[in-house]
Length: 400
Image 1 (tube, rainbow, N blue to C red):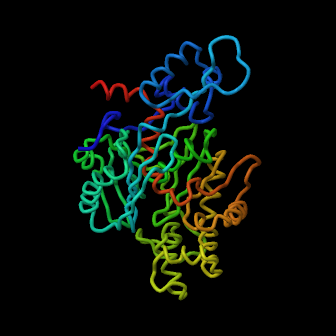
Image 2: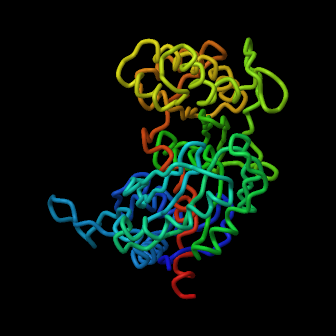
Image 3: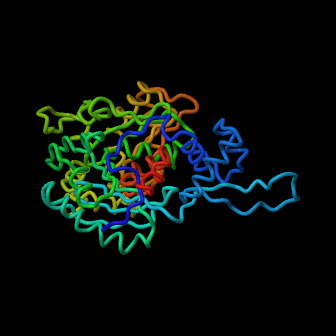
């Protein structure tokens, strides 16, 4: 049986005011720690007594720890011991369900990848969920080192209803109305957080990445599935039935690529990894239509592979510019595998986005913050966001 020290099984979307003072203290320490209690009070607006009370609770839960006093001359009054996130006791577990692979991951409280493993994705939804159920116990036994699990995150592309924990529709996988949370919660007895990978990455960027310290962010994910997420006031919005961010069928000028929806020139059909890999194979760049082979060529400096990745960014740029100009965020993050293996292409991305609309001074257009760990981080982001929003639910779980 899997270890459980966690919030209730039914995961829900966090709201800005949730978590109260304890959540505010924990998020302040994450954002700017190590911090003295006085600095935490200034950052949160809480009284010294409230900061001390919440800090004691968080220390008791193993979420925050006191560090040794800094060197320097002694000061009058009680020593101000710095507070930092305690990443020694808890882990978030997550699974990313992709078209070619399943990615299993463990992250600590600072969003750092502790372990990850990858398996080929084979079969229908029932087969995939059975693979996850079968692989998790061994993965945790090998990798979790006895630390408590905060929960299980499961993310994928397409239309994911996070309230119901259901993958409503995933075109490339052929999934419809798959009750992921119900199946995995029953099998693992862990709280299961199910979401789209775009929303999960937006949460991760706000907590640990380019969006840290920002409240307005847009995330565009370009993979086999193309979707988006946006945050305002520091909260990732989901829309009715969690369908916000459905950008895969935006038209791409000049594209004649057929789409499963019956039209031609849709964004996802035009720039998906399958489409780009097929083009690379047709051009004789790779021996099979395998996107990983194209990435390996680009990493090695092949100019033709680089040109194809640049073309992909050029085709995706109008959608990125549309999101930037309509939603006007502080940060626009584009998660795309070519930018991971060739980070020098980020400048080209910025140029292409700016061609289709103004980028205001102070706005950041950037690649994802997590490099090759992007899928692992996405998988665990919902679990970690829940812990930072509602840390005191750990106490409820421990006492139940």
